[in-house]
Each structure stands twice: as C-alpha cells, then as structure tokens.
Image (cartoon, rainbow, N blue to C red; front, side):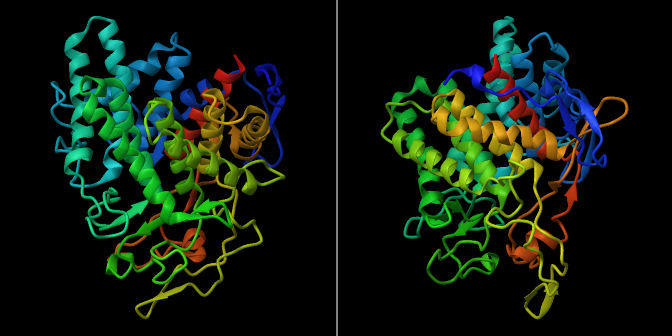
Length: 453
C-alpha cells in the first residue's frame, strides 16, 4: 500500500473547547503546535514554562525540546526551532559537557532517577549538526554530555539484584526500590540505545553487551506486566511486592508484583520506547527479534482498545466513559484517599504518543502497513477532532491531558494505582497545554507529515 492511501486530514477541526465551532485546517500541524506551545508557553507537571530556550532540565521540557528538534529536522528552514533547542541544551550543560545542571546550577542527574535522563536525546542531533558546521568544541560538549548520561545509567543506576525476579532491571527511581515502570523504558532505554548507535561501534564487545542490556529491560518488564487476555501491560511491577514502597502491588498470583490498572500514558511511553529503540538496534543482534515481537504485540493490543468512535484512547485503557471513580475512595492505613466520581476520559498525551509510535513503526517497516495504517490514520484524525482547539489569533491549544500519575512511594499513600486514583487522585488532574501532550502531538504530526511526503 503506497503513501497516497493516507487520507487527507479533514478540512476542519472540531474544537474540543469551542462548543462545536470549526477551525480552518492548516497544512502542517507540527509547525503550528511548535509555534503555539513548543517554543514557549507549556507546562511541565503543572509548572509553567514561559520559553523553551530557558526551560529547566526535566523529562517534560526535554520531550518538548526533542519534538521541536524533530520538526526542525523535517523543516530545516525553521532555524529558530534548532536555536531554541540548542539554547535549552546549553543552559543545562557545563561548557565541556562534564555536567548536566538544573535551574540553580546544581547537578540535575540525581542518584538512580531515570526521569532525569531522556532530555539528553537532544544531544545527538546537536552533536551531528555542530560537527557538520565544523564547530568541534560544541560537538564535543554534546557528545560528552550524552556519554555522561549513558554511563550514569549503564554503570551507576541501581538495578534489581541477583536472586530476585527481574535481576538486572533498572529501578525506576531510588525511592522506588526494585520497581520497574513502563515509563522508565522511555526515560532510560532510548538514550542508551541512541548512544550505542552513535558511538558504541568503537568497542564491538561492549556494544553487543549493551544492546543485550537494553533488550533485557524490555524483556523483563514485558514478562511480568503483560496480560495476554487483555493484550495490555500493567503500569508497573515490583520484584519485592512486600516492600512498604510497593503497597500498590499485587501480593499474589496472577500478576504478582503488578499494579492494578492499564494506564494509557504509561503504555504510550513503552510503545514509543520500543519504536525508538528498534530504529537503532542492529537487526543482526540476537535480541532484535524478541524486542520486535514485543513491539508488535503491544501494537496489536492497543489496536484492540482504540475507541471506535473517536479513534483515540481512554486514560484507563480497558474501560470507556461509563467507568467512574466510585465515590468511596481508597482506604490506606485507615485513611481515605481519591474520593470522587470523575469519569474515564479520552486522554491527549497517550493518544498522541500511540499515534507517533504507530506512524513511526509503519515508516520504518516494523509494522504491517495494511493492518496499521487505518489505525494510525484514524488516530491522527481523532487527535485533531478531540483535543485540538484554535484560538481567535490562530494559536492551537491541546486539551484533556493527564497532568501526572505515579505509584507510591510509602510516604505518598494516595498514589494507589486504582481506578479511583487515576480518575480522582490529587495529582491526576485534567489539564491543557501540558508539555507531555504538546510534545507527543508534535512528534505524531512530524511522523504523519513525513509519511505523507
């Protein structure tokens, strides 16, 4: 099936916040979103970022920066995109690349915190571009910074110990001992894989072992979180479910150690991580077939749970809007949390990242075009119709995004991983122009526009 079978985007976008008003359809949504909320005016877990070029180091600002850089790669005449991402990287990096810095000038890479790593994905494109310009000092800065992150993950990050299930798996964070979350596969494995592709060939033996290490992360979490009946992965898994920080985990089989629900954005990070890693993983590596099989299994499951009417996906994947928080909340240690009756809802950031991974998988030949192009096309149309609003001045907004979600630790017993938590939790707010939705929409749009060329 050829590219011309991609359907043209509908002539109008129904504004999700405009009571059925219509907005004119632009040619390039990636550019419109970059210029509406990519270069400025987005949120990182409800913290407003006025400008990308001065945003602090964070996985959300890093996601937006990476998306803006992908848009620049497709439209290189938009030099302001590149300049903003370069400024973001420079503001967070020591001049020689020997340190990643936070807004206060202190080290931004905390011990065994996997969320601190993925913003470094911008360094590879910056490295290549500055090298092409002959700017070797800046190129070395970005290579050194990327290497710092890769080595911190590979050699210093806490792992599940030998003798436990899932030995060798990266902790999601130090405060979550022996826990792997779907989110973490995107946060750690993508930059690890990109580094191996760019620089790993210099040591063939280490390169082979490192790719096996990357594959181990996917094989481990998939083994423990994949529900064959539902064709979905639980949000997280603990190798030590009896630990106080894993109070949310199942203590008994089946799915011992797993959290209770299938959270859409968690699966989105996982699906995108698989696509991004497979882009660079050597096809002759012994573990490549296993990682590809996982990617295709995830793609098939998400296809099953795509909302047939809207083409996008719900916050909690196995339910529709008839499911609500139960009004009674969750009782933990005698206290009640997550009281409310909010309904399940179509969620923007997960829908965007699913669309991105489908389109990328099709473009790279990882997914069957005939089987999945209709899924991706329907999803992209659904993004436009369900989540994109146009202001009077022509700027776009993206609505209906989950601000954040997590599990525990013990000091935060409200984060239970239940239906009540994901729909009525104190940190699980429905927001607009959140960077996780802005970034994933740009990524999906870049893939859509690239596939249409």
